[in-house]
Image (cartoon, rainbow, N blue to C red; front, side):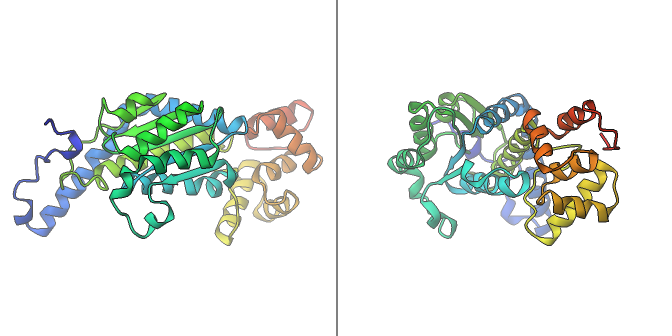
Length: 307
């Protein structure tokens, strides 16, 4: 039987257990860097995935993640951070893990073979036309992930797959197949390492570009963040000050007027008459702050806004 790359032996694995600790760690670090570089060859398909996910959210639909094992943890990490980082409503993000919440404390292996659980999860989430499903599997053949893709496709859902082996069922089934061709693991088959690292990078790339498409990033700032603690409220104020050119105290005042919204605070400082007018500008510009500022400028506002 031909081994897939994720199951092959790494070139530095022979005698690894006899090496000095520092040498083992050096090999581990080098293997992670090598795996991370695999994302460069997948940029085109990651870009397509981001466009598809953004289109679903823009139209009022949802993005769902489905995965098992360590791939599930990578998917979960990406999904859970989207509401806080980019202000995407929590009910627009769905996470389906093989084994359910129990998998968060007991990462059992058998549940990744449960295809019926995957189909039930997709059905229970009510996924349908307009929604987008992102399935992740290092091998590209994990039964749970494959079944989730199959069920989603049968319901008219746009499907995206992330896998670390080419020519696998998951990649072949998906509308958009992202192959992260990582090298063999230093510990053969331990895909929580190199493959997992590449998955995390690629998923973060996809979701960040998705947020860019949705107008939630401006000059590298996460301008749609949910500022629900001291650190994030201070970050929000710094963003308002940097984009609008006002001082920190004024930035805090504007944020108070804007109900904590960075976008609205910037528009208020740029000359929008009130929060309702700022929201109307954002609605007219597809929630894109730069475009909203241009509209405001075109309406005769002359305040400095830093664009």
